[in-house]
Image (tube, rainbow, N blue to C red; front, side, top):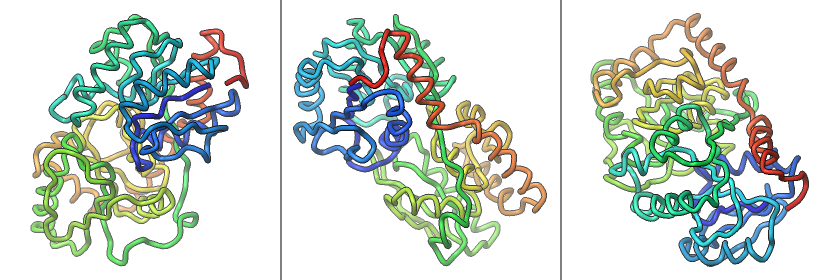
Length: 352
């Protein structure tokens, strides 16, 4: 199996982390080759073999990857990047996490809004893509409604690994903190959270911090008010410690295909405060504190206050229920579902 990772990022964040965790489970079925641009994070540790192409991601995806696929003649191709190689002549399965560039181009990077949309639509129009796989029922419905593909759309889901405080070590910070995780981009709605944070501190006088973990992306980059710490990118091990020791993990996102951080937070035993988005409800049910209007700072502040004042018994119940929900999710189960899709196309195991 050959995987297109040519247009992913230089750090292991959302889409990169998904692929990083999926590949080891997928290798129980097939020999996995990953093709990436020189400027993309390496997957050598989790693949059978890695091919490294030109540093320019467009050149790598549009010219080098189709050439590599024609030379290797893999039994299957998984398109797992932003966009798609329009010159590809090998039938493929496409992994789509969401339809943000179509639903909300105003929230998308220029690469996703223009290049990603065009390349994806072009390849879908040529019927090279035989199946689409995605991460949630919500995303599957959105893909069918927005892109109207001629091929089937399947949900393979995502996974997580349960961890507790004893496994991740001590707190990463000396002061208590709320945590939010994600690339700083418009749809994550960080600006509202920062307004809500100022209101929350004014009302409660709470002495802790709001820690923002994630790289700076595109769009307006908000300034940090008092009590807000931009920690930037952190490793997976350090991120687990941040999750496990947080008072709560907060997401004011306006749109998600799955929302890996809230699932990871629940798996690490953290209380989740989040927008009432369909993928979050799909993953956690009622086991999180909901923000009904994430664009209203007062509503977000109220949810933070509720997390802080939650009684010990109610907190234990919510954490227990959340962990029971996320226990249903595993990377092996996602790989199993993906393999079933590949088998429906006549793919045999342990081939390339």
